[in-house]
Length: 441
Image 1 (cartoon, rainbow, N blue to C red):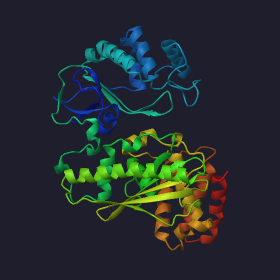
Image 2 (tube, rainbow, N blue to C red; image 1 turned 90 degrees about the horizontal axis):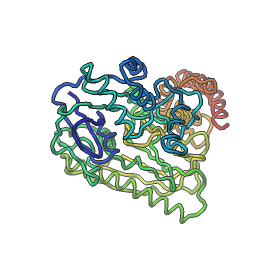
Image 3 (cartoon, rainbow, N blue to C red; image 1 turned 135 degrees about the vertical axis):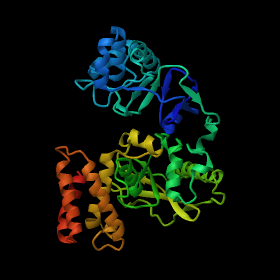
Image 4 (tube, helix red, strand yellow; image 1 turned 180 degrees about the vertical axis):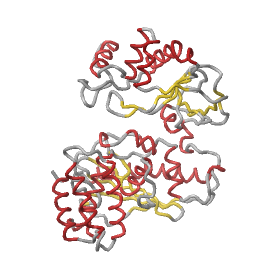
């Protein structure tokens, strides 16, 4: 039986829970619960909810339709929100509220009222203990995590010693030392640690947008999508990106110090976590990489050139584990991050579209850009990195939706990969040039 987790108010009884401790911790203090017996849960989707409407009162049906968007358009939800709050709805839609089908709207009081009525009028009559709700698109355009609603008392017991206060968040979600294998690679331990923390998910809107990039970002994304081992990598490259050039040296120093402070606290927390869990000799070293020229175009950036200002490197137990870079990425914003995958990994990560274009930019640029030609997968001095990048690009191209606008880019990317496999640099350069022209538009 899978344990359930709840954050914030740790109480037993009729309430919302989750199977993911990292999600529960976003709501506050983490509490863990064990079911006293296997739970019989109703899988609540648009289709299954519609099938229950004939059993529900009009009031409960309207509440459930509003909360989950079933049988409604977003404009109907928007009107209801305006009436409830007597002003513009607090949740703004990222794509308008026109003819789009309804989506998840979450307010704790309304959610509780709707599910209590649903439990009373349907779940209990048909022998269910509660409901499981898969993740769902929200009214605001993000993704709402999956959750479990337990509708009866006495079905869960609180597991003692599992409450983690705000001062203990850097312990991660796997506290017992017996759960950490001494033979597990440091990279995998860092991933496990990050999944149990929130530090890197905090927004820093007045300073920069932080996100994981490079090979590790692609590796984690592909693994989560069921494509493990696509290309090996062992370090984490975090960008602290600002949307336009920084003109003041004092401002650069201020942002660089903030970047160093954030990541130092996180990696130090990781080292403490290792020591508590049996790796007693864990150590950390912070280095600033000198010789990074101001306004030097960065490698592996995206459709437009980046500018690198400061770089810090974090060495744990002799392994270069984390790089942080203060860079310029024109127009960058938190809208470029995927809420769903960031929460999954405990590290901010870009949307698939931006991840795909950044990876493709490096591959195509290794044929056309002087600063990246070392990574050319055919004859570059670091061609092994280029080969890994070609593999990642290929995998991402098959996950990327074929929109009319993006179809040409996907086709060119696959032709470029075929040229790499045939070691035809001349034809590869032709396709790479066309790709770069599209990315720079």
